Image (cartoon, rainbow, N blue to C red; front, side, top):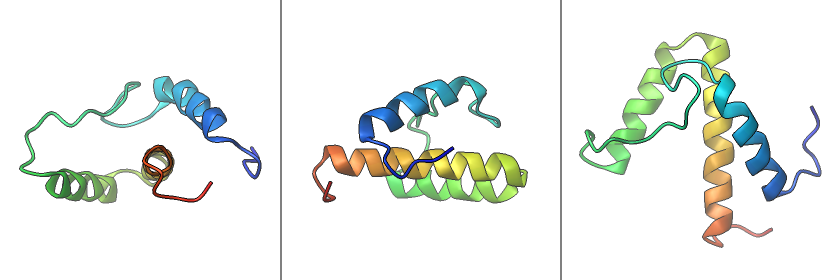
Length: 82
């Protein structure tokens, strides 16, 4: 898969297509923070700790999806140049 010319819209569509096949605790759905963590920082710390314990393939997919979601979120907030 080549993503050099992928637009934010195309990446959102790709993520929607990927969610049903994601491995791990999300089991085919978007991961939601349920409020159990005391802060966003704590929630992300727990997430990254869990990724360290995951099998390498699942960890790679989860980290890639998370990175794309964070990048798209930053674009929506106009925190990054397009």
